[in-house]
Amino acid sequence: MSAIYERVALIGLGLIAGSMGLRMKRDGLAREIVGTARSAETRAVATELGLCDRVTETAAEAVAGADLVVLCVPVGAMEAVAAEIGPHLAPGTTVSDVGSVKGAVITAVAPHLPDGVHFVPAHPLAGTEHSGPRSGFPELFDNRWCLLTPVGDVPEATDRLARLWRAMGSNVETMDPDHHDRVLAVVSHAPHLIAYTMVGVADDLRRVTESEVIQYSATGFRDFTRIAASDPTMWRDVFLSNKDATLEILGRFTEELFALQRAIRTGDGDLLHDYFTRTRAIRRGIIEAGQDTDRANFGRGDAP
Ligand code: NAP
Image (cartoon, rainbow, N blue to C red):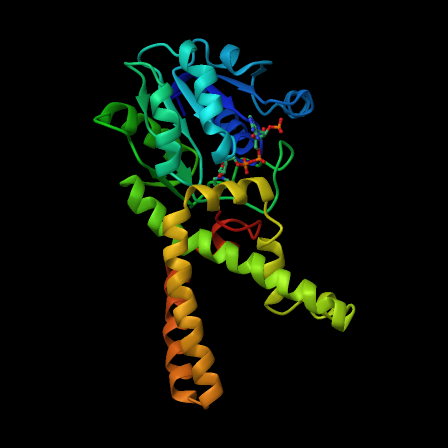
């Protein structure tokens, strides 16, 4: 495939950037891929694994001459990175990111971008519970969605970025950032918080039941522990920056939980059966859409 960009700069070299670098290199999607990370250790690993063609010490060096810059750091670090690179961005450059929240990233990053720079935030709905430069693999985005939330009227920059994500294996959709954040609160952010909570509850119980929680964790609990093993920094930032939407969904979740709790207490089997029939249909719909984990991503992990 011919190159879509001349020079792509990846800022942050963890799971997502590493997977992008490996995929773009494998398929020749950029003539040059430059990367940087804050720690010397990550930069050394990225060089060793060949995640990009060239690794620089600073973000300012990485973005020089790039026609696409992608911020691949935790959501809470986006503003500082944008402030650092802003003065070094040339007009015509497209800046994007891969953050799991869009509204807060736009508020944090946009003020630092000079006139003439196109801002097309993105969120690949692909990930695993692993993080760091050694965790990336080129197939991560295959058959996953990537959601773009362009800022302003930037159709050409948006189309070009969409081409890159499609070439990396994703299905692409464009949407409004607030809508994105509400949808993700339902499908990803609230479920992660519930998994964290459930594992926390089990950890408390473990003190009572000794090793039983681990011994019998092959049941549904094991999936919770995998989700709850996701990167603590990333998820702290997700909840703090998608506060309103997540709290709204958690409020609804609590109401439903109370309703089910009451049904159990009062022995309302019909309510429970109807409820579980409805949820089972949702699962079937996900499988039919090809978005269940095992088929969509080789069983390697969850969407974020
Ligand atoms: P990751 O593997 O933990 O890598 C994060 C990278 O950001 C590392 O290179 C790290 O540098 C750098 N970094 C961390 N804190 C920083 C700071 N304060 N200032 C500058 N650089 C910093 O993370 P990831 O999973 O690739 O996630 C990156 C972004 O993608 C996040 O915004 C996340 O919301 C989003 N995302 C993640 C997933 C997922 O499932 N993991 C899915 C979709 C989107 P060092 O290594 O040098 O510390």
